[in-house]
Amino acid sequence: MANARKPFISGNWKMNHNHLDAVQFIQKLYYRLEKDDYEAVEISIHSPFTDIRSLQTIIESDKMKFHIGAQNCHYEPSGAFTGEVSAPMLAKLSVSHVIIGHSERREYFGETDEIVNKKLKAVLGNGMTPILCCGETLEERESGEANSKVEGQIRAGLAGITKEHVASMVIAYEPIWAIGTGATATSADAEEMCLHIRGVVAGVAGNDAAESVRIQYGGSVKPGNIAELMAQPNIDGALVGGASLEADEFAALIQYRNHGR
Ligand code: PGA
Image (cartoon, rainbow, N blue to C red; front, side):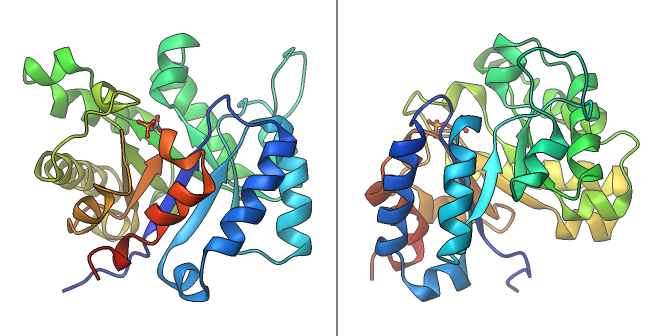
C-alpha cells in the first residue's frame, strides 16, 4: 500500500547563485512546472542567506508554491555571534525549512551532534521544519559501521525532541561518499538505510512518528536516477545539490514521475 507521505524534493544550492541568479532561477523553474507537479511533490529551495529576501518577495507576490529554505542557522535567537544568522531571523523571512547538520557543516565547520541537536530545537521552536542530515563516510561503510554511525547521529540529533515534532520533521540520508561525486548509492542500499533510519526513529519517538517522518535520499541525485530512488517504499524525497542549480535540470527531477512515459 502506498504510504501517505507526500514526496518532498529539496534543492540545496550550497554556496552558489547570488540574489540576481536566484530570481532568474525561480522564474524559470516556475514556468517549467505544471500545476499537477505541485500537487504531486512538495518543493523547497535552500539558497544562500543573501538570496532569501529576493526569493521571498517573488514567491509571495506571485503565489508560487515553493517552500523557502535555508541551509543552516545558529541555535541562539540573538547575541554576540559575529557572522551568524538566527532561526527567528529566518522565520521572519517566511523560511519554512532549514537544513541542519549537513555533512559539509559537520566536516568544515565542526558541527557536532550536540550542536545539531540545539539547532534542531531552535528551528522547531520557531515554527519551522528541520531537514536533519545524516550519513556515513566510505571508510565507515566499508568497515560495516554505516548503520551504527547513522543511528548515533539520529539518536543524538533527536534527543529531547517531542514525538509530535519528530513526526513533522524531514531526515536526509546522505552517504558522504556519494555527495558531489557522481557516485550514487544503489536504490537498494539507499532503501535499506532509510528503512533502518525509520526503525531508529520508531525506537526514539514511536511508530506514529516513524510512519510520518519523511526521509530524503541525497548524494548525486540526477534526473536519470531519481525515479528509481523514489520508487523505494522508505524513500520519500531527495535532497539535491548539483542538479538543483539549473532550473531545467531541477524541473526534470521534480517531474520524475513522468519519466519513461
Ligand atoms: P549532490 O549534493 O546532489 O551535489 O551530490 C547533495 C547534498 O550535499 O545535499
